[in-house]
Length: 473
Length: 105
Image 1 (spheres, chains in turn yellow, green):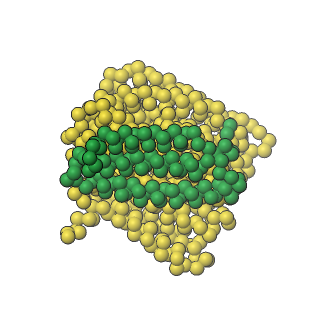
Image 2 (tube, one colour):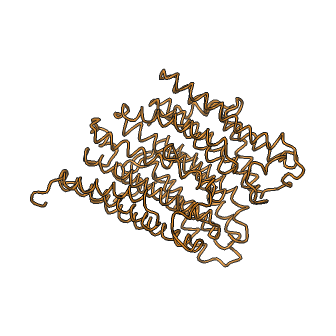
Image 3 (tube, one colour):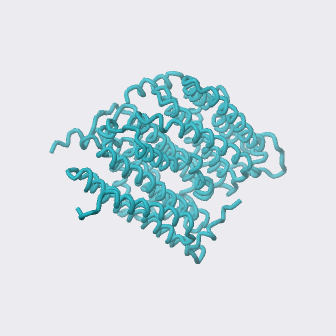
């Protein structure tokens, strides 16, 4: 057996090496050395991230079950950077006394889920896709329930695992119908055998609804708010950015390759879901008081915008979605970074608590301002260009009414993002949050996200590069 | 192959099982029963895969293989879910879904 071309799987292999090293280190290290291991783990992952940017081989493995294209490598790099920023932000929380003994578990579980996501994105076969999806989901439930003694955290975990199991069951039922009608699980063979018969349309709908759970599209969004509020702040950031981004990548590659011939079936479905998701996410976000819950509904609304790019069904639409995810990773992680620093220091996470935040913490306030403006889509920032390209992809198809609905929703979203900005900058109170200072690495993470928000918007070759890669799929 | 039983009969059984699972997931109040409903859904998928493989594509193995993987992953999922359910029990002295509403607004 020739194993020389297994190097195509380099990204996953290096992640496995990191996980195994950390497992061994946890077993053989003394209690005092574990404190150091956190930095070692972050360093190893930083190495892994850098390794991802070296030129990589593309191709197929295991008879087409695993494939790597330049676009897939780009997707994995985006996820790697996002996870690295999450690891920077998580330091303050993991160094708390109650987490001291088991902080390495956080790294192991996070890396396992990331590995699942990589396999899921690279899948060339429904079996591989399912395995990756489960590997990406089950450890996240344990991460959400990480704060064992806090009921809210446990509640988030149980809601996540049960609904994830249900959604993957529904998705599997769709896959079984696809197998029954086409006689294969390989994407290449399924692609040629789809004829739009009713059973295959049912299978497509079941498959999309399974992934829609993960992306939290309406009507599959009900778990999002509770899980995001209950889970530890950094885990929420991970869930809303990395997990969601990976699922979007998978959904878009499968819709645009495997189910391409079925586009008459899924296009109306996606249009309805996009409109409902934007409207529901925005309307519920307005009345939220808890900042984590607020960001949950804002991320539901953002998922609605992401769907706009998929509706078009063109490579341009695909490029806009990937670019938007790149922007969304930085903007949302910046917001979660500020929230987690404040919550670790003071335990406060209501919007009212942030009244007068600017008078005591000007730097963190500015980061929050940039993040929220980027999420809302204010011109010089990256979020504006992300949304602009998405709308352009829809307008290209002649669906101007959909663009109109999306623009109205953007205005509504601007209102609730500005509510937070108003609390931070305009409202004056006698006892605002005292000056807080995050860990060194957490601040480095914030700097990375701010650079991302500013540079991606202004430096236009990035989008052209993404677009050039999208034609390769 | 069983005499007089075609693929349709298997599909009827698996579809009924699937919807019993969905119904149970929505209606039941006990966390363990909800987990059992999910297992029903996964097993209906397994019946589907095996029946399709046996009747429609007898020379393939993919259907059998994926059903084995589904069984394995269902076990892993149940293990994690039950661990979290135990934690719920420690916090609340009960596993009734009605009490898991600390974030109701």
